[in-house]
Length: 101
Image (cartoon, rainbow, N blue to C red):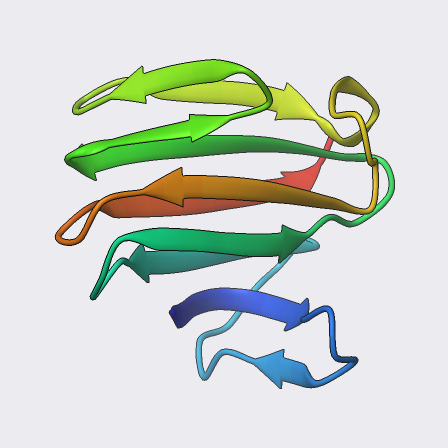
């Protein structure tokens, strides 16, 4: 995972800040699956999110999102409003984006 913009705190409590300038509260993470598996991304309360699949496909929250599709959601739309789990095959790449609404 590469944090491209904003700040992000992972499930372990580690905090990261991108070296880019932001004028509002937001996050952008490039997620690349180097092997079949899952990634759990933490959610910020009151943010709106989107996951753009640029390669492959993901499964999340009972939805399949294919290449070039955008999965849009709010933290309250997911079963656990603190994180979202993405399941994908090796080679899948997504852009996880979010910000205050």
